[in-house]
Length: 313
Ligand code: MLT
Ligand code: MN
Image (cartoon, rainbow, N blue to C red; front, side):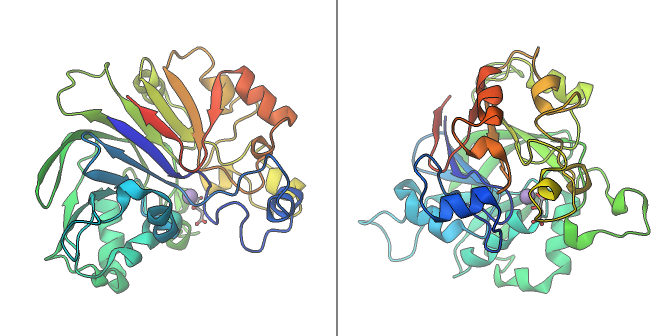
Protein backbone atom coordinates (compact mmCIF):
# COMPACT_ATOMS: atom_id res chain seq x y z
CA UNK A 1 0.00 0.00 0.00
CA UNK A 2 1.20 3.47 -0.82
CA UNK A 3 0.39 6.65 1.06
CA UNK A 4 1.10 10.21 0.18
CA UNK A 5 0.76 13.40 2.17
CA UNK A 6 -1.13 15.81 -0.08
CA UNK A 7 -1.27 18.62 2.46
CA UNK A 8 0.66 18.71 5.73
CA UNK A 9 -0.61 22.01 7.16
CA UNK A 10 -3.60 22.65 9.40
CA UNK A 11 -6.58 24.76 8.35
CA UNK A 12 -5.43 27.80 6.40
CA UNK A 13 -2.16 26.23 5.23
CA UNK A 14 1.38 27.54 5.72
CA UNK A 15 1.52 30.48 5.41
CA UNK A 16 -2.08 31.21 6.35
CA UNK A 17 -3.43 34.01 4.14
CA UNK A 18 -3.54 36.75 6.79
CA UNK A 19 -0.90 35.51 9.22
CA UNK A 20 2.00 37.91 9.55
CA UNK A 21 3.81 36.17 12.40
CA UNK A 22 7.53 35.44 12.03
CA UNK A 23 7.28 31.97 10.46
CA UNK A 24 4.56 32.92 8.00
CA UNK A 25 6.52 36.00 6.94
CA UNK A 26 9.67 33.95 6.55
CA UNK A 27 8.10 31.30 4.34
CA UNK A 28 6.44 34.01 2.27
CA UNK A 29 9.84 35.62 1.79
CA UNK A 30 11.31 32.28 0.73
CA UNK A 31 13.71 31.73 3.62
CA UNK A 32 15.75 28.59 2.77
CA UNK A 33 14.63 25.49 4.67
CA UNK A 34 11.05 26.59 5.14
CA UNK A 35 8.52 24.72 3.00
CA UNK A 36 5.12 26.14 2.15
CA UNK A 37 2.38 23.64 2.92
CA UNK A 38 -1.16 23.08 1.74
CA UNK A 39 -4.09 22.03 3.92
CA UNK A 40 -4.69 18.74 5.62
CA UNK A 41 -5.12 15.70 3.38
CA UNK A 42 -3.52 12.35 2.53
CA UNK A 43 -4.15 9.77 -0.19
CA UNK A 44 -3.62 6.00 -0.20
CA UNK A 45 -3.62 3.32 -2.87
CA UNK A 46 -3.29 -0.47 -2.87
CA UNK A 47 -2.40 -0.76 -6.57
CA UNK A 48 -0.92 2.65 -7.37
CA UNK A 49 -3.80 3.25 -9.80
CA UNK A 50 -6.96 3.90 -7.81
CA UNK A 51 -6.68 6.24 -4.85
CA UNK A 52 -8.67 7.09 -1.77
CA UNK A 53 -8.29 10.66 -0.56
CA UNK A 54 -8.64 11.21 3.18
CA UNK A 55 -10.11 14.67 3.76
CA UNK A 56 -10.93 17.00 0.89
CA UNK A 57 -9.03 20.18 1.63
CA UNK A 58 -9.74 23.59 0.09
CA UNK A 59 -6.38 23.09 -1.68
CA UNK A 60 -7.39 19.86 -3.43
CA UNK A 61 -7.13 21.42 -6.86
CA UNK A 62 -3.47 22.36 -6.37
CA UNK A 63 -2.85 19.04 -4.60
CA UNK A 64 -4.09 17.16 -7.68
CA UNK A 65 -1.93 19.42 -9.84
CA UNK A 66 1.11 18.56 -7.69
CA UNK A 67 0.51 14.80 -7.70
CA UNK A 68 0.36 13.22 -11.18
CA UNK A 69 -0.98 9.96 -9.74
CA UNK A 70 -4.22 11.81 -8.96
CA UNK A 71 -4.61 13.22 -12.46
CA UNK A 72 -6.63 11.76 -15.36
CA UNK A 73 -4.72 9.25 -17.50
CA UNK A 74 -3.55 11.25 -20.56
CA UNK A 75 -4.59 8.31 -22.77
CA UNK A 76 -7.90 7.77 -20.98
CA UNK A 77 -11.54 8.77 -21.32
CA UNK A 78 -12.50 12.44 -21.74
CA UNK A 79 -13.71 12.55 -18.13
CA UNK A 80 -12.07 10.40 -15.49
CA UNK A 81 -10.06 10.40 -12.30
CA UNK A 82 -7.93 7.95 -10.30
CA UNK A 83 -9.70 9.27 -7.17
CA UNK A 84 -12.24 6.55 -6.44
CA UNK A 85 -13.17 7.47 -2.87
CA UNK A 86 -13.00 10.31 -0.38
CA UNK A 87 -13.04 9.59 3.35
CA UNK A 88 -13.72 12.36 5.88
CA UNK A 89 -12.42 12.33 9.45
CA UNK A 90 -14.49 15.32 10.57
CA UNK A 91 -16.54 18.21 9.17
CA UNK A 92 -13.94 20.95 9.64
CA UNK A 93 -13.69 23.42 6.77
CA UNK A 94 -10.16 22.24 5.96
CA UNK A 95 -11.50 18.70 5.50
CA UNK A 96 -14.73 19.20 3.57
CA UNK A 97 -14.48 22.40 1.52
CA UNK A 98 -12.50 20.60 -1.20
CA UNK A 99 -15.58 18.51 -1.98
CA UNK A 100 -16.93 21.55 -3.80
CA UNK A 101 -13.98 21.34 -6.21
CA UNK A 102 -14.78 17.70 -6.98
CA UNK A 103 -18.05 18.49 -8.77
CA UNK A 104 -18.43 18.05 -12.60
CA UNK A 105 -20.59 14.93 -12.34
CA UNK A 106 -17.72 12.63 -11.51
CA UNK A 107 -18.65 9.40 -9.69
CA UNK A 108 -16.71 8.50 -6.54
CA UNK A 109 -17.71 7.19 -3.13
CA UNK A 110 -17.88 9.57 -0.19
CA UNK A 111 -17.38 8.01 3.24
CA UNK A 112 -18.07 9.72 6.58
CA UNK A 113 -19.68 9.11 9.94
CA UNK A 114 -23.40 9.73 10.43
CA UNK A 115 -22.61 13.01 12.22
CA UNK A 116 -20.49 14.32 9.35
CA UNK A 117 -22.96 13.12 6.71
CA UNK A 118 -25.67 15.06 8.59
CA UNK A 119 -23.58 18.23 8.27
CA UNK A 120 -23.15 17.73 4.52
CA UNK A 121 -26.87 17.08 4.21
CA UNK A 122 -27.74 20.21 6.19
CA UNK A 123 -25.53 22.44 4.02
CA UNK A 124 -27.26 22.45 0.66
CA UNK A 125 -24.18 23.67 -1.22
CA UNK A 126 -22.83 20.10 -1.01
CA UNK A 127 -25.64 19.01 -3.32
CA UNK A 128 -23.32 20.14 -6.11
CA UNK A 129 -22.14 16.56 -5.60
CA UNK A 130 -25.35 14.87 -6.78
CA UNK A 131 -25.89 11.96 -4.34
CA UNK A 132 -26.96 9.82 -7.31
CA UNK A 133 -23.45 10.25 -8.75
CA UNK A 134 -21.33 10.69 -5.64
CA UNK A 135 -22.67 7.95 -3.40
CA UNK A 136 -22.51 8.77 0.32
CA UNK A 137 -21.69 5.85 2.59
CA UNK A 138 -21.83 5.89 6.36
CA UNK A 139 -18.74 4.81 8.26
CA UNK A 140 -19.76 2.90 11.36
CA UNK A 141 -18.01 4.02 14.55
CA UNK A 142 -15.70 1.23 15.56
CA UNK A 143 -16.23 -0.92 12.49
CA UNK A 144 -14.18 -1.83 9.44
CA UNK A 145 -15.26 -0.88 5.94
CA UNK A 146 -13.86 -2.20 2.66
CA UNK A 147 -13.37 0.83 0.47
CA UNK A 148 -15.05 0.70 -2.92
CA UNK A 149 -15.16 3.14 -5.80
CA UNK A 150 -17.47 3.27 -8.80
CA UNK A 151 -15.52 0.41 -10.45
CA UNK A 152 -15.35 -1.88 -7.43
CA UNK A 153 -13.18 -2.64 -4.42
CA UNK A 154 -9.99 -0.65 -3.88
CA UNK A 155 -8.11 -3.36 -1.99
CA UNK A 156 -8.00 -1.27 1.17
CA UNK A 157 -10.05 -1.33 4.33
CA UNK A 158 -10.63 1.35 6.88
CA UNK A 159 -11.28 0.84 10.56
CA UNK A 160 -12.83 3.88 12.19
CA UNK A 161 -12.66 4.86 15.82
CA UNK A 162 -13.79 7.97 17.70
CA UNK A 163 -11.02 10.11 19.15
CA UNK A 164 -11.29 12.83 21.79
CA UNK A 165 -11.98 15.99 19.83
CA UNK A 166 -14.39 18.72 19.02
CA UNK A 167 -17.25 19.47 16.69
CA UNK A 168 -16.39 21.68 13.66
CA UNK A 169 -15.91 25.36 14.55
CA UNK A 170 -18.91 26.47 12.49
CA UNK A 171 -21.15 23.98 14.32
CA UNK A 172 -20.15 24.96 17.86
CA UNK A 173 -23.03 25.60 20.26
CA UNK A 174 -21.59 27.68 23.10
CA UNK A 175 -24.62 26.84 25.27
CA UNK A 176 -23.78 23.15 25.30
CA UNK A 177 -21.18 21.08 27.08
CA UNK A 178 -18.16 20.54 24.82
CA UNK A 179 -19.83 22.99 22.39
CA UNK A 180 -22.24 20.20 21.45
CA UNK A 181 -19.50 17.75 20.41
CA UNK A 182 -20.52 14.10 20.20
CA UNK A 183 -18.81 10.85 19.44
CA UNK A 184 -18.28 10.59 15.71
CA UNK A 185 -17.57 14.29 15.22
CA UNK A 186 -13.87 13.46 15.03
CA UNK A 187 -12.53 10.06 14.11
CA UNK A 188 -9.21 8.42 13.50
CA UNK A 189 -8.80 5.79 10.80
CA UNK A 190 -6.64 2.69 10.53
CA UNK A 191 -6.01 2.07 6.84
CA UNK A 192 -4.87 -1.41 5.78
CA UNK A 193 -4.53 -3.45 2.61
CA UNK A 194 -7.61 -5.71 2.38
CA UNK A 195 -5.48 -8.85 2.55
CA UNK A 196 -4.03 -7.95 5.97
CA UNK A 197 -5.40 -9.89 8.92
CA UNK A 198 -5.81 -8.55 12.41
CA UNK A 199 -4.73 -5.25 13.83
CA UNK A 200 -0.97 -5.63 13.30
CA UNK A 201 0.75 -5.93 9.95
CA UNK A 202 0.52 -3.07 7.52
CA UNK A 203 -1.43 -0.39 9.25
CA UNK A 204 -1.41 3.33 8.63
CA UNK A 205 -3.09 5.24 11.42
CA UNK A 206 -4.30 8.66 10.36
CA UNK A 207 -5.38 10.95 13.19
CA UNK A 208 -5.17 14.59 12.04
CA UNK A 209 -7.24 15.92 14.93
CA UNK A 210 -7.01 14.71 18.51
CA UNK A 211 -7.57 16.39 21.87
CA UNK A 212 -6.08 13.68 24.10
CA UNK A 213 -4.42 10.30 23.83
CA UNK A 214 -6.82 7.93 25.54
CA UNK A 215 -5.82 4.41 26.58
CA UNK A 216 -7.85 3.07 23.67
CA UNK A 217 -5.95 5.24 21.21
CA UNK A 218 -2.60 4.37 22.70
CA UNK A 219 -3.43 0.66 22.29
CA UNK A 220 -4.37 1.19 18.67
CA UNK A 221 -1.19 3.10 17.94
CA UNK A 222 1.03 0.42 19.44
CA UNK A 223 2.72 -1.65 16.72
CA UNK A 224 1.16 0.22 13.78
CA UNK A 225 3.51 0.50 10.80
CA UNK A 226 2.99 4.23 10.57
CA UNK A 227 1.20 6.92 12.54
CA UNK A 228 0.26 10.27 11.04
CA UNK A 229 -0.80 12.41 13.96
CA UNK A 230 -2.17 15.82 14.91
CA UNK A 231 0.79 18.22 14.93
CA UNK A 232 -1.28 21.42 15.02
CA UNK A 233 0.53 23.26 17.81
CA UNK A 234 3.80 22.73 19.64
CA UNK A 235 2.78 24.85 22.66
CA UNK A 236 -0.85 25.03 23.68
CA UNK A 237 -0.81 28.86 23.72
CA UNK A 238 1.56 29.50 20.82
CA UNK A 239 -1.04 31.47 18.84
CA UNK A 240 -1.33 33.93 21.72
CA UNK A 241 2.47 34.07 22.08
CA UNK A 242 2.80 34.80 18.35
CA UNK A 243 0.21 37.55 18.74
CA UNK A 244 -2.13 36.10 16.14
CA UNK A 245 -5.07 35.03 18.30
CA UNK A 246 -6.32 34.03 21.71
CA UNK A 247 -7.32 30.45 20.98
CA UNK A 248 -5.35 27.64 22.53
CA UNK A 249 -4.80 24.28 20.88
CA UNK A 250 -7.04 22.73 23.53
CA UNK A 251 -9.86 25.14 22.71
CA UNK A 252 -9.61 24.05 19.06
CA UNK A 253 -9.69 20.35 19.99
CA UNK A 254 -5.98 19.80 19.33
CA UNK A 255 -3.55 18.54 21.97
CA UNK A 256 -0.15 20.21 21.92
CA UNK A 257 3.05 18.41 20.95
CA UNK A 258 5.04 19.59 23.98
CA UNK A 259 4.20 19.57 27.68
CA UNK A 260 3.42 16.90 30.23
CA UNK A 261 0.19 15.91 28.49
CA UNK A 262 1.46 16.59 24.96
CA UNK A 263 1.75 13.97 22.24
CA UNK A 264 5.58 13.73 22.43
CA UNK A 265 5.33 12.67 26.04
CA UNK A 266 2.17 10.57 25.72
CA UNK A 267 3.58 8.48 22.89
CA UNK A 268 7.20 8.26 24.03
CA UNK A 269 6.96 4.66 25.15
CA UNK A 270 4.56 3.49 22.47
CA UNK A 271 6.22 1.37 19.76
CA UNK A 272 5.22 2.38 16.25
CA UNK A 273 7.05 1.93 12.93
CA UNK A 274 7.12 5.56 11.86
CA UNK A 275 5.60 8.58 13.56
CA UNK A 276 4.85 11.64 11.48
CA UNK A 277 3.26 14.95 12.43
CA UNK A 278 0.67 16.30 10.00
CA UNK A 279 -2.00 19.05 10.27
CA UNK A 280 0.72 21.52 11.34
CA UNK A 281 -0.44 25.05 12.14
CA UNK A 282 1.18 28.12 10.58
CA UNK A 283 2.51 29.15 14.04
CA UNK A 284 4.15 25.82 14.92
CA UNK A 285 7.94 26.19 15.47
CA UNK A 286 8.57 22.61 14.22
CA UNK A 287 8.13 24.12 10.75
CA UNK A 288 11.52 25.78 11.16
CA UNK A 289 14.46 23.42 10.63
CA UNK A 290 16.99 23.77 13.43
CA UNK A 291 14.57 25.29 15.95
CA UNK A 292 14.55 23.84 19.46
CA UNK A 293 11.05 22.48 18.81
CA UNK A 294 12.09 20.77 15.58
CA UNK A 295 15.12 19.21 17.27
CA UNK A 296 13.03 17.98 20.22
CA UNK A 297 10.54 16.33 17.91
CA UNK A 298 13.19 14.66 15.76
CA UNK A 299 15.13 13.46 18.79
CA UNK A 300 11.98 11.72 19.99
CA UNK A 301 11.82 9.86 16.67
CA UNK A 302 9.15 11.92 14.95
CA UNK A 303 9.20 12.97 11.31
CA UNK A 304 7.64 16.21 10.18
CA UNK A 305 5.18 15.67 7.34
CA UNK A 306 5.58 17.69 4.17
CA UNK A 307 3.53 17.97 1.01
CA UNK A 308 4.38 15.18 -1.40
CA UNK A 309 5.85 12.89 1.32
CA UNK A 310 5.50 9.28 0.18
CA UNK A 311 5.20 6.23 2.41
CA UNK A 312 5.34 2.60 1.34
CA UNK A 313 3.67 0.11 3.67
C1 MLT B 1 -9.22 22.73 13.15
O1 MLT B 1 -8.54 21.79 12.79
O2 MLT B 1 -9.30 23.06 14.35
C2 MLT B 1 -10.03 23.47 12.15
O3 MLT B 1 -9.59 23.15 10.87
C3 MLT B 1 -9.98 24.92 12.41
C4 MLT B 1 -10.61 25.69 11.28
O4 MLT B 1 -11.84 25.62 11.09
O5 MLT B 1 -9.86 26.36 10.55
MN1 MN C 1 -8.20 21.29 10.77
